[in-house]
Length: 231
Image (cartoon, rainbow, N blue to C red; front, side, top):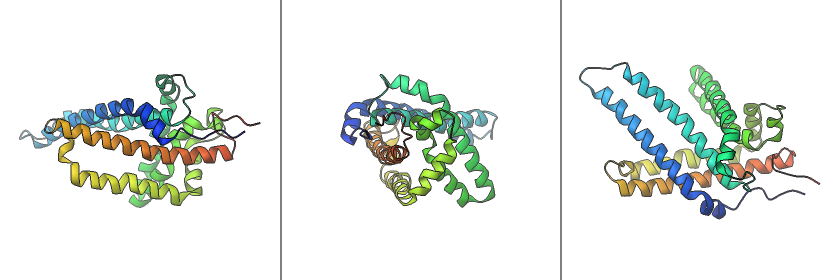
């Protein structure tokens, strides 16, 4: 028996939007606060101080942790809610998801030092590694490497993944930035900022739905989907 792969997009939005939206607000406020701190140091007449390294570190940490948390939350609501609560899903997968995210960043940056384009290519190849952690039975049993497996699945369907990634990571963010960038600042336009973040949340859920649904289909074909049962 092959199970249904994911919840419908509508069901995921209905059940998880408020929580994912709230997490996105916290992420945005945190990043805007850190950006403001760094900007003040850069504009200071006293020159750069050692605090720029502190705020830079927290900014890097925020850029790593919040996308992972949003990915975990979205993944929870997109699958068949096999875990009783989202907090249990996060507790189960956060540590390994963070480790694999750090590995993907590290290996991608090594390629960036060689040539910029290969760095982007490998960052794209490793983009499914957190989902491999969440959904692959073989990964949970230590049989496969998440980065290698992510690269394998992306290469198998590179056209699908490249088009979806290009649209949601480049085209739509460029449009959002050019049209709404000023209105995302809570300090200037709190109402507009909430609306922009709501739109970003919907786009993020749609992106995750397309990527996860495709990946789970591949995992099911290879009998490696964690929540599947086969008769």
